Amino acid sequence: MLQIEVPSQEFYNEATGEFDYVEKCTLNLEHSLISVSKWESKWKTSFVDTVEKGLSRSQMIDYIRCMTLNQKVDPKVYAAIPPVSLEKIRDYITDTATATTIYDHRNNRGYHKKETITSELIYYQMINLGIPFECEKWHLNRLLTLIRVCSIRGTNAQMSINDIFAQNKQLNASRRAAMNSRG
Image 1 (tube, one colour):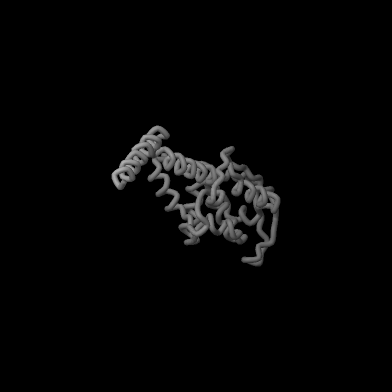
Image 2 (cartoon, helix red, strand yellow):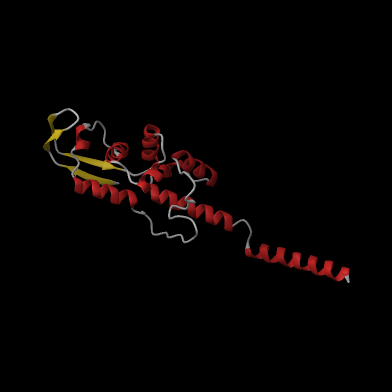
């Protein structure tokens, strides 16, 4: 969770052409699958792809709303978030939130670049891999890393080393027998 302090301030609201005042506020933010789902339901586009291309200011502010755990936050607070705090939020969103590093031909989130990643795809992968839904509250990048680890381990764990050796031994014996029978 990330806490952001928004100081009390008066600022000019370009949308209304008036000055607005905001009381000091602490926002409790969580970058999670739940937040992404809320954002995607409004914007009708992949959050992961949009972040890679760069969120517009309005998309970023709206995502901060989706990340907010506080109840009944004055909507004007979001327009008053200082630029330094916006940078902290961007850093928090892009933080890996894990010590795990995966090296392979895929991108750092564990997906091929061509694939559009949406919250529904992530939920599907959680179901497919048996990852409990409590993990939807985790930092999104940590959850994506867990999905990638489960995918790798699941693929590699299908056959044990001894099973692979036994299978290869049997295939080699069959091939030798076929070659010997030909002459």
